[in-house]
Image (cartoon, rainbow, N blue to C red; front, side, top):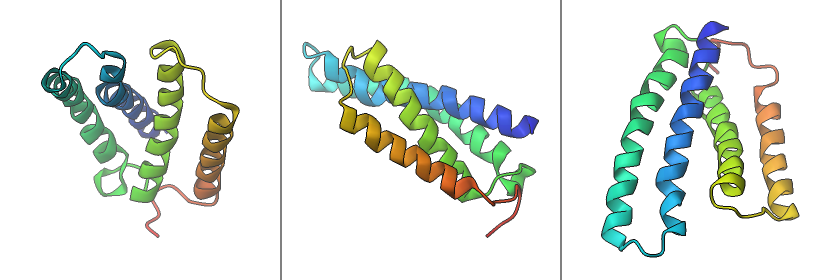
Length: 123
């Protein structure tokens, strides 16, 4: 259970960096394109430094309890949550009801995908 929690924490931190790298520049219309690209790459580097160990630590081939599909599904759920927080707090945009419903459906898919999958079992 501890490996899962550390994996999720690292993926959460990783996704925070990636969300900033992908979307922060959108609100900076005064930045030229080259600057947006350069700053985004600098922000993305810590994402990889966190994401690679998270996936290795969590995967069954490295002693973790999760299969590759489980890691991806968890990552997608975290991505949506981090993106929603970023959208509201940083970008100061209000998601539409249909956006929230769509995200809820994706998160419901995560639950469906995780049900009945034993930890460490390769499909």
